Image (cartoon, rainbow, N blue to C red; front, top):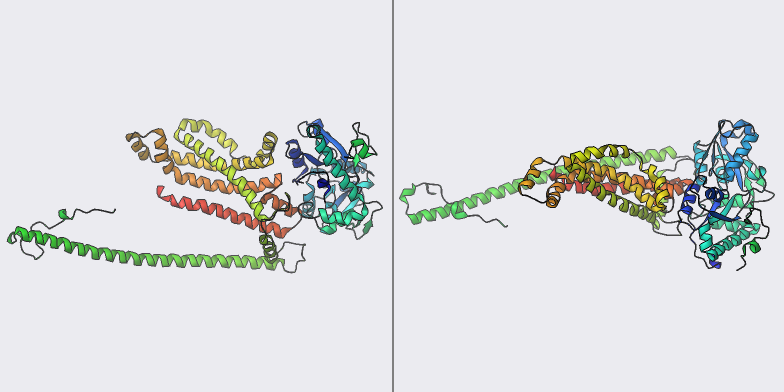
Length: 599
């Protein structure tokens, strides 16, 4: 809407998968300034839940605007005392939501640490978890409370302003280093945020704001839901339409150095600015016999030569005839075999199509009569969504809204880097271990310890050490690709026929030539088998990793569409993931068949 441009800024607004990821992106310097939960800058500065990094928080961006939402099966709940045994979600451990929920439960005589289960759930995942029954309720931000009502998954039990009127919620924050090194940029960003919040605070602008922030590249929510939140006229899920006396307050509340609220934000912050050769002469005659049946002694030497030549010509003709007959028989057999293979392939294709059509028909029949949005979408709905996405698969509407083609390319790019590096390392290490039994026995225990660890378990360490979410995902691919190729390479080298190595020793080949001309060709089938397993593992891992790091990639696309409960897009993305996996495996499978002779 031009607020950043007005300040001379070119800003990219980047979405992340969770508040923990937002924190890590900010600490690692992948983002310059951040929209945070108001307690987060203080927690980061103190080193609570993360490394200690000094932060500044010049303004609280909004107050109120949260709610306790319960699953629809709990509509009879009147007091917090009835919530013992519930499973609750909050956006983050260090959040006003966690504090307020614990306060309400404690006031009702419920011990938040013993009587209930409270866990951090990213807000976009709250509705889906509530609907699935994984949560009994949550204290979360809007529009996700209203989205639960919209989906018929839950109802609004209590507004946060009824717990603590005027409580702070989210804030603008940045590392102190950024604010001090680039003070003018920092002030310009803050000024743009102040202008934007003041504009949004005006009730006459609320529907315009809802239309601007509802699309996929921002909230990824229905405009209707966002309008209900911002205008303050909303259904509560209990059959009532509420009209708030005072909707969300979006006016910024700057915070001075001593922590007190400053009522004059602009002045306080200073913001107003072969061929083959045959020796035929040696193949001539049969000893002592002539072609005419006469004894050889009755022939002159010259006649013998002529007879020998005639014999050669006759044998050539006979051999040519036999060769043509053999080729003809071979062609017949080959044609018959090809016909058999062709029939078998046709039969397989027909079976496959029949099975697929049956599954699709059963799927469509199972969802027939189900209202839209109330169950699993059918294949017709998925095909319709697929057509829409494939109509323009490479569009880019900012960093948070890209076509499925660009999402797949981003994932394949990360896959290519991590898989290529892992393959080189695994093959080199596997050859060394395979040629040295003692070294193999020494290293094998460590491999057996590391191999069962899920690649995703390494993600927190990668994020902490390299401080780059994209490269952390690449390292996850590296870890998932390493072990199958390493194990198969070592196995293939160990099981090379000893005769090959003996011949190499007799020929006195250098170590390098022995490696390139004997070891690697002989072990190639096993190596390619390992590479084939690794590519599948890597493709599975990158999808899961992208769900954690956010940004661009098919994993993040699935996560983002699931958060919006756009199941048609999710199912099509799943199908696309499967098809890409088939193509990746088929490429290495073809290479494996070309090397089958070595076995």
